[in-house]
Length: 204
Image (spheres, rainbow, N blue to C red):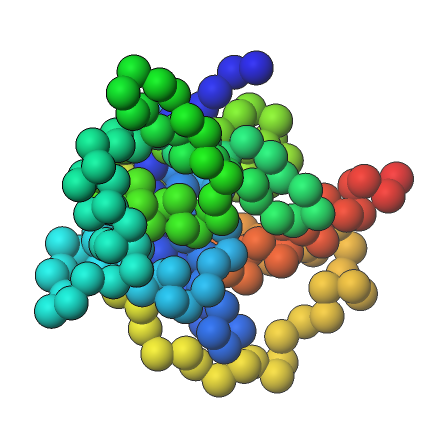
């Protein structure tokens, strides 16, 4: 099964849903994006590492990364290997004393460790096909690679009471709404729209 290399390109906070965050993984050699819902603590842990901040005391993921270093365990890669009922499953591929060890992990924790150890992140084509979002090629500079977005976590806005009911929308309207949301970089909301579209298609 073909593996696809990913990189963290953004942390997104929903402008319509309080306490809703997504870490956005981008296809290294393509335009697809894989947004994954994570908790606020995990979002902050990833942001701290991406911004190269140095907390006065080690955070939980810093402690685990230091543990790996102390005992000469090399975290080689993170693999997002399964998507089941909207939940992503990941594992840490570690090398120790010429032995390869696989450790199950929540995807958010695995990514927080990946940014601390600079290891590579992979998933499989079937997962990107199911849960990925395709970004349009930028018109201003064809072929240019988009720069990573800010990783700061803004304060949550109030819930938008005028948000449309997705259950009453047609597939065409949902796809149009998805593009609008992607343009606003609201990946957390895009996840729920994508899932609704996939549920409609799967029910045919």
